[in-house]
Structures are given as C-alpha cells and as structure tokens.
Image 1 (cartoon, rainbow, N blue to C red):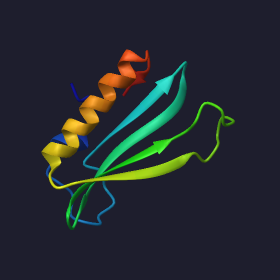
Image 2: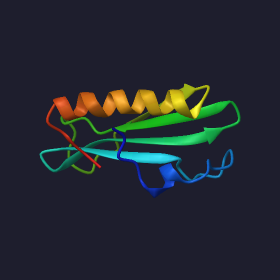
Image 3: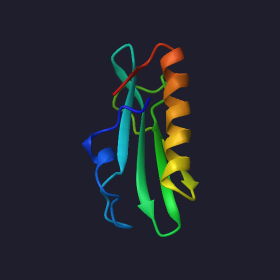
Length: 94
C-alpha cells in the first residue's frame, strides 16, 4: 500500500541524520494539503505530519505534529492507514 520514495527501500538512517526513512505528499485538487515523513530517532521512529489547512492561503506555513513509534513497522502501519484514509477522501498520494 505504501508508495514511499526510494529511501523507503534503503537501510534505516542514523538517528538525527535528517534523511527520511520514507515520505509521502498528499494533494487535494492539485494542492499539497499534507506531508508525512518518517525519521529514525534514538527511541524508535517519528512520523512527522505537516498539515496545510485548506482554509489557509496557498504557500502558508501550516503546522507540524510528530507521532512517535517504537519501531519502523508500527510507523509504516500508521502511515499506510493514513494514506488509505486520504485516498478515500479523493486525495492523490505520492
């Protein structure tokens, strides 16, 4: 289900390296409304969601919320479920 970047197939990044384990961009009517990026942390994996509310102007700053997980498997399950929900809402996932 996950359509991650090539980084999703690579070895996990070192904690704090800044390179995402995988990332996705969600669009509605051609506009980016969210991004999801997973990063290795000292305690596991953090999935950072960056949300751009449709009520904001295009190019707005949006807001970020981290979701911590103990393992990469748990993080992938969370993201896969979120992507399915976005697809049901007729969003494009890349």
